[in-house]
Length: 342
Image 1 (cartoon, rainbow, N blue to C red):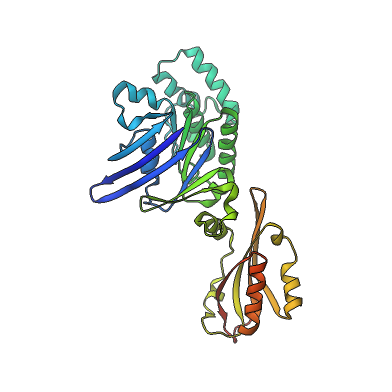
Image 2 (cartoon, rainbow, N blue to C red):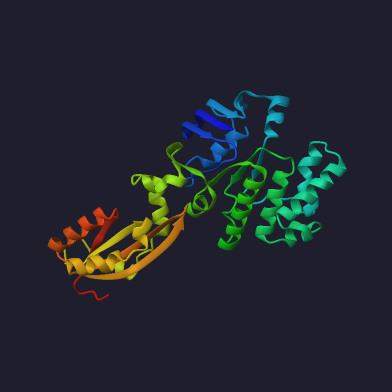
């Protein structure tokens, strides 16, 4: 459906995209994650030719839109629609008229427009807001209008540019559920960019990680836990990992005090088993659980524990070995100062 080959784009001395290669199959929800300035928005805008690459090919439905001009380009653009972070609604137009705008531009008949809007409003749960104006809507409702407007001309591809970044967590979940529903109902290919791993985790089939204009990893979310070197897996666990309180961070030292602070990453059956209590009894060491979090992702239970061991180096090594045998990933965060009470 979408194939980007050797894509390069610069603005003066700044290289926004460098040798980008991506293939996105039809009906897929494909996420691109990265920090601000990584090149995500530039990449997305190349897909509908709002930006033209300096070098490379942008195939949409086997047609290289980077080479198109004029009427041919406008026709190719009808296959894609875009949803923006800030909604971009016309404040002086009603919900009905905002959704109708792209269809009117394309010269569709009034009865066709009317029928399409009455199909879309129940989908985005705004049937009672047809005659409301944007200023009368919440942020989530505005984004629903923007999504309905994007769907009005029946695109094959939906491009989402940080579509949930301006929304609160509850509304974000609702919008992501709507995008997932649209993907299943219409089979639309969705390409979204975000800086939040929670968004990727909730709806994406695959994810590409961007850094300094490059794709540094492309991962299948269904098998992400099988690759312990995966950056996406690490990002998932980072998002899940509880943050150490500042008071504890200040008391950590590199000196081996006999009280190592460890972060343990669990997945699968180990995440719900009594591993900590078993290993405490078997190795005769005290384990103080300080922080914990657990989640379920693609049918796999995963969790993070931060624990304090009362164990010198002689007892720490058997603990680390047992964790390795149990397929746990362990990080030593430091050592708790002896004079600090937890």
